[in-house]
Amino acid sequence: MRGVRRSSPVLRYLLTAAAVATVALAYRYVIKVNPTTVALTYLLVVLTISTTWGLAYAVFTAVLATLAVNFFFLPPVGTLTISDPQNWVALFTFLVTAVVASQLFERARREARNATARRLEVERLYNFSQRLLSTENQAELFNAIPRYIVDSFDVKQAAVWLPTRPDVYRSSSEIAGLDREDLQAVGARGEPKFDPQRQLSFVPMRMGVRVVGSVGLNGAPLSRPTLEAIGSLIATATERANAMERLSRAEASRESEQLRSVLLDSVTHEFRTPLTAIKASVTSMLSNPALAPDQTRELLTVINEESDRLDHLVGEAAEMAQLDAQQVELHLQSHSIRDAVDLAIEKSKSAIDHHPLQLNLPESLPPVRMDYVRIAEVIAQLLDNAAKYSARESPIHITGEVRNRKLMISVADRGPGIDDFEQSLIFDKFYRGRNQRLQVQGTGMGLAIARAIVEAHGGEVGVTSQLGNGSVFYFTLPLS
Image (cartoon, rainbow, N blue to C red):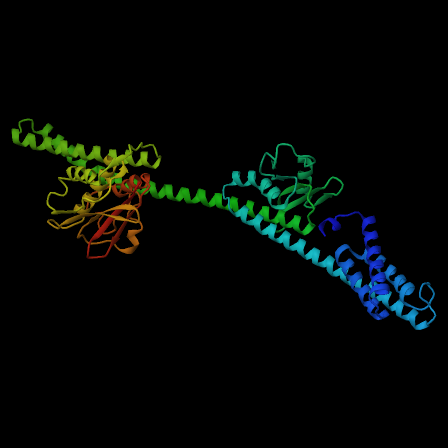
């Protein structure tokens, strides 16, 4: 049937004539029926041809069928003359009915075809709009729009012109007929331009009554409403990208100002304390040259400890910057988690000296691929954090277990706990608890560094806590 539908018009007319002849011969010599049955059969043939090939072929079939009924079935049979006037009325009625029914079928066929085309265009417009929403960066969006048009609407080429941009964005390097001058002219006039012979279409990109550019298509059998909808969608996506970029700049500026304020507050508070102690010790030594050896040693010890503290603060800031820039190289090897835990306990010895440490690390824990020095740094940070926010002599628990093919290490304390709001912020850079920032020293970078290290290993870090019942900080590492 598909091959017949694509056949030439001459062949179709021959096939319709053959169909009429077949019915006439079958009813005349094989199956004896009355003229009414013949007429109804021919009416079905006419309607079938009208549905399949269109009105012209149906009218041709109706005329041939009328002649066949007259010649083969109405007396005198074998001639085109009609003896009974009623038969003239019957033939005329049959011909009119066949033609009118063919017209109705052709109209229904045409409307169905148009409805299908509109549905396909709406689906394409929807898919096109979804692709436009997938990109928020202006440069990427403008470069991708012509390609999106070609892919979504099966056109040969597409080009987009924006008055705020120096270049015309094209779907390919060679664009036939989509000249910059035509795009600028359509954008300036705000009226579409069509060239059916060259299959070129130019439509303005409207945002309400404001024209923000123009779009050109080559080889686009699209309706004018669809072309105007494409222009409106591109204009909306352009304005959205502009708004998102402005919002991003404003948000970045606000976050930069907030970060600057938090960093200044942290630096002012944390750096001033050791500097004040160092300055006081040096001043005491300079103003009292005859200090006793014990006093001199005590002041030098203060200077040494506070210098180490300053060095630690600067080291944390540098490490945080390196982790943010992903400039830290991890030396990944298969290690037992106990190696990292032992190293972390050694590093945090002074901090956890007054806290009983309870370990629950089964021997059956599998080795994990990690940079165990970095992971030890994470565990040490969690131990220091637990000791810092827990009462003296309160125990600290370190637990290891396997969950969902991941190794989970948790550090539990019996501190004051963290409310739900702060649990979502506790791992942010420079964030410190609202109720603890003036009571406990720190820059708020330790947990942020720990999270960056764990995420660099492909793991996750988190906390569960309840006010008054302590906190459990945990992190996971994927098992190979």
